[in-house]
Length: 211
Image 1 (tube, one colour):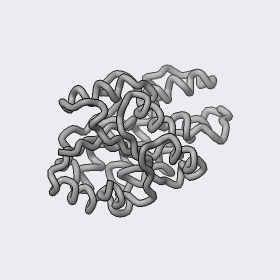
Image 2 (image 1 turned 120 degrees about the vertical axis):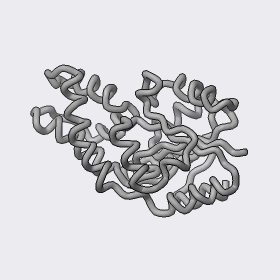
Image 3 (image 1 turned 90 degrees about the vertical axis):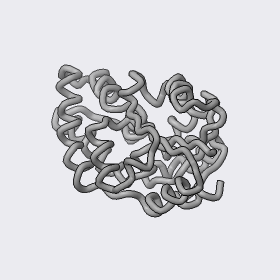
């Protein structure tokens, strides 16, 4: 049985433009300047990690207040609007029919993650749906991938991790997972580097079924 561990934002759902916009909205509202690489930096961090990063950038607000604002902005979009990426639903059902073990690990909180997957009709297709909150760390920490494998009851090297973020892919690879990079517009400038750093790279989600 193949074991898959999927990212959520930019991998299963077309959320990166929305995710980025709601995060940057908080910086804009508080007059905090940021560089062109900000989305790449914060994507693996989750809400708490991103709040801490924003505080380090000079955002003078309590972490809990920042996180609450992120949740407020995100919940409505994920619950009602954000779509699955092309081929995701059909391919997940195909893999499940083949007997694969499907799991999710994302920086997004359950308040965004769960309603979105349920609306798309794929929440129950996964054995585990994890937020980084469930591990108390971020996808920038190799230990999260080791811990996920332990919870799935498999060796870390027997998991295929699928993510559109270069940093997360490199970290999962360093932890011992097999890694498949996947294209998203938000990471298009890193395609060639991702091809080098990962075991596989696909432009279309449906191609994962051929790996």
